[in-house]
Image (cartoon, rainbow, N blue to C red):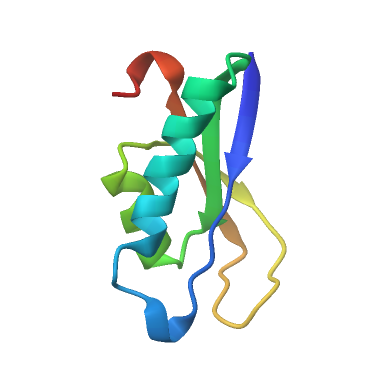
Amino acid sequence: MGTLIIGYWVRTECTGRGYASAAVRALTDAAFRFLPEIERIRIDMDQSNFASVAVARGAGYQLVGEVDREVLAPGHSGRGLLWATERSSWT
């Protein structure tokens, strides 16, 4: 089963406008439409990134795990959330 990981960053002054949500939906649609070997798409994020949690959840992704991760920036918690969707459940 092929897995694709997508990520997104939005400049602070551009948050809250739906750009990340639109990008996640478009990337997910395109991957499942044009990459038949991809069966699963994952989004990984720091658990303190509440905006990214909302994007993943709003796009229909499911929380599938938590992992320890390196603290790379101020505000990171050292804990990561793994979200995923499957081709069979994407509408």
